[in-house]
Length: 102
Image (cartoon, rainbow, N blue to C red; front, side, top):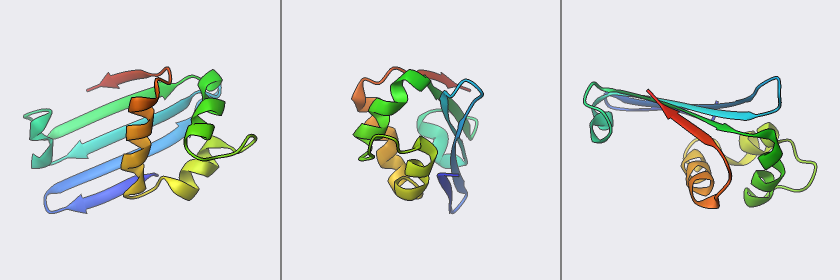
């Protein structure tokens, strides 16, 4: 779990995991009136998948070292408020990923 926040009627969740192929999944789920900028039903979910081949570069961009496990790095440096920085780095990095929204 990278983010589990509550602010009034809004909640924000973000989690990361590796699938069997070693791809990184970052899944978000926001509920409440704060989602109105994106959706008008009060719920926003998204799923980002980063191929295993991109993880060494992502580790480097996130300040890790060769051999660092991505999930350990995320747990150490990118939880809570820092999870927003993780999203920015991925968005601006040019790292290949697939984003799906619901």
